[in-house]
Length: 456
Ligand code: ATP
Ligand code: MG
Image 1 (cartoon, rainbow, N blue to C red):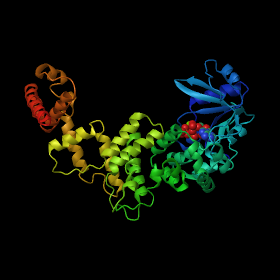
Image 2 (cartoon, rainbow, N blue to C red):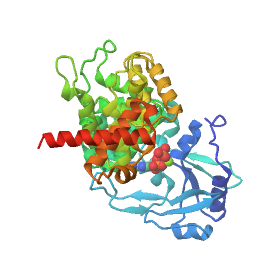
Image 3 (tube, rainbow, N blue to C red):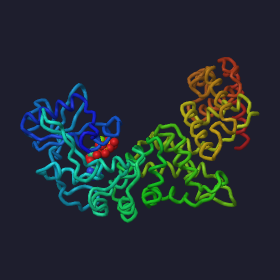
Image 4 (tube, rainbow, N blue to C red):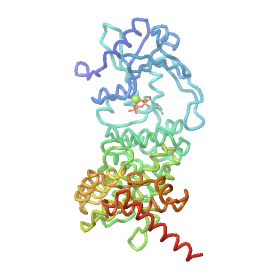
């Protein structure tokens, strides 16, 4: 391989850190995911260094560095970017299927690489200034990189038994890198999938979001399903497998979900909504229909994300999209109907809902703008462009006006009257005038009082 060996492109500040450590008499290497990404020509999320220097020594070499954790990591800032320099480590025993019970400093870079998860993440690169930097690659990481394969370092059953998060990392990395999982490693995920229950919701959530941010999340999602990991992490989604759909010949509901996710724009909200939009179909299936799967699915989507401790806004927005994904636009909708639709969905969610619908169309083997979606989108744009009233806040009067002018006490009646007025104005924007609205409110109040008296 000599001569033709690919060299990673290392940013100048990283090369500077390596040089300082070597000149200080220490061994130091670029290591892990950043080296993998650099060799693949991808922009690494962060650059990590490993060294035989203990944290105190690293701090002495970099006077303004920060050392404030128990894992031997010193953080150095260069040009506003943080770099982590970690002493060689060796993991001791694992008893909770997730964290090593203790972390010891190790003696060699090989030992440090041996505790890492996959061969492509278990390479190091560095060398004395003046010498040609060299790879340390005891597990064949570069060969696996060439084959685009994720292979566990050492015995996969043992490695997943030590830390079950590694299984979620495997399917996530397969999706983000567009790699396969080596058969023995994949089979071990199947045997150990149940251990994923020991991983915290937050960690699963973070891996799932990274997986969904891949160009084709289906690569990882399919591996999750086929290995049995999906059954543990998202049992309701696992039940979509084998459920028939009259959409694409020979494909089931899970295939439809995967196509929809791949077609969805790459934002966490829309990708999650695409993943979960039909989550209630297995539960609601009857006579070839799935009645109420939108409302039931919204609840299930919220519960699933709450179980992963996803941020509350993410839970709510995804549930809202799932709740509304079954609208059936027809070109004969009046402009008022279009405005009522915007009001129901919320102007801030409408673009996401249309994007989800377009993806759902693609997932059903249709063009993205099937069911007149493009026409609906342009009608919505036209309404929004005129600053039309879509909520109470845009009415020409507010609760104070009603209290002052019509003597309405604060409370339920006031809220109902404002709601009625908003509906009237959404349907007929010309009514948004102070005098007209007060007049309408006066009549509304007397009608309501009449009804109340009658029902007494
Ligand atoms: P990315 O940064 O793209 O999310 P990564 O592989 O770089 O992916 P990091 O969390 O940055 O992930 O971890 C850096 C390196 O630490 C990994 O490449 C791997 O060598 C090692 N590593 C991370 N998590 C584990 C784990 N659970 N078990 C063993 N090694 C791990
Ligand atoms: Mg990384």
